[in-house]
Image (cartoon, rainbow, N blue to C red; front, side, top):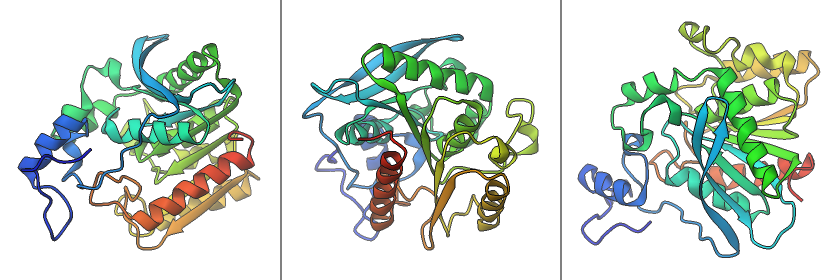
Length: 291
């Protein structure tokens, strides 16, 4: 998305002013609560793709999804995209298109939809957290399964199912690859590993607690300067997975903050994001998801 002539970026930060950010975010479909919008947010076209919005039936009711797949390709692998807390907004949609350019039938389900809030349009982080923290893990797994089944029914190869996710979506990668036998591989971008004790009723086990139950190989991509996820937690996760004989790898970008792949936010670190994307694609190829 290009800002309007009046929505000029701050020369010191490369980000739009708050007023310009709100206008540009609303016009481009970015999350309003995510902070200043970078003027250089990546836009991926749909040339050679079939892409759009759809509705998927789940046990709890219909949910929206955004999908993209390569045009004219029979049985492309299915890759689920697990959202940040900010919902199904333009950055997640663009990631879906980027995966389709790699040959995947990519699909991002809006698994927070039934909680009754339009997350991209919300501006209060605390209000957003109340919504996303109300999502049960059991329902989350069922929604992801439903999205994969929807893609399969439309020609996707769900026998080559992968999942990637960002922030809370990264946590959901660890959960899905532990609770479901369906995915062949997962990639967690700065996914939280330890859950708040208050969430126990809805989230019975944290990724750390699920480590012995991991069913698919997962690549963890983390920032050494992440204020939300400590390196001690990353090391503990490594140790638990190693002790359980599970297949997982981690790569830590020493100076990267949380959200270093989010190209629409000031947290973006291009070199680290590019390297992480390459590692993600290589991981999915290694385990037979991408061709």
